[in-house]
Image 1 (cartoon, one colour):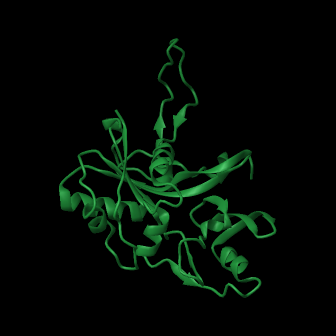
Image 2: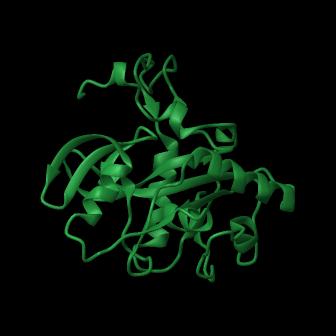
Image 3: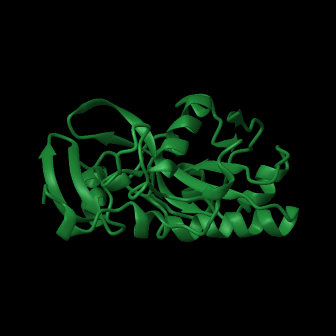
Length: 230
């Protein structure tokens, strides 16, 4: 049985805070738990906060462009761009909410590395095998509404490759790859919510074989030569 457990009591995170210590101060982990952490608190802990002048007409746009490698679409204040990580998302992942006035939170420089760092710290303190996912909220082409996805992971598979296995009728699967990291991130969002001040969720009861070294960048971000929409 899969359980989704919100971690309550996480204090406001500041640059330099040790996330593993904050998490263990509010939760007890079990072997093969997955800890899902919202990008915002990771960015805050890593000091990825920048000042900007909200009164300047072009300040937000210039900040978004500085975090973009390519702009795909632009409409009024919305920019769909590609980040240095290879993510295609709104406003290059720059977040102006839940931060002090005149500040913005940027994506972590390397979300996979951030996930590994927290995973290693949790493992060192507990001796447990755990996974860590850094999640963020993305929109999706052709579908209304946003959902959380994984932008970094460690210790839990990003993608499960079912190619070569058979379906219930014995037919071979030739194209099925399941992005379990995104599914876990999205499930965790049900317990976090957008206004509940719960930045960390534990997902428990996942398939043991999914626990391995992993990477969003290496496994989930589609290479340009495989992208039919570029």
